[in-house]
Image (tube, rainbow over all chains, first blue to last red):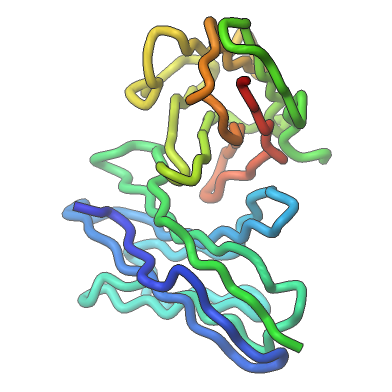
Length: 116
Length: 111
């Protein structure tokens, strides 16, 4: 079974609008972390935001927020006020503290295009 | 800090040749990871080190791949002999806290 599922291969959004990128995960580990990374066309992987499984509040970092719904095992990334520079591939990833140690497992990614 | 530094950025080599990829992690980081990215398989972990010791190498495809970390500031990933199916982007990442920071990657093409 897939550990991380990103069901949207591609998403389009108008500049200045908000967009939600979906991510669901599968784990039986009680302690885990969820991450989002951005990969622009230049190829580097840029860390965006982190949510721990025990965190009570949803994580926020500037225009990025993580909509964490633990019972549904989802960790959607919300980007507010989209900018042209947000066009990139976005990866959701999980680290299972007990079962997988320090390994990050990535989803297949969502290609976001921001239209002017 | 300069971030995670990988070299070379691009490598084109002929099948059968030895390839060595290099990584300098962020100073003070005690974990180092090697990932490979392909269209078919996405991002997959090859191996990771903690305090220079290999912890999990279950992702290393086969004996042709080897990785070393002789000290806290340097790691290598070697492929010998290389094959066309090894063509991919290879990322090195390091961390000490929660998030891992990635290098720019090495794009390897084996012809």
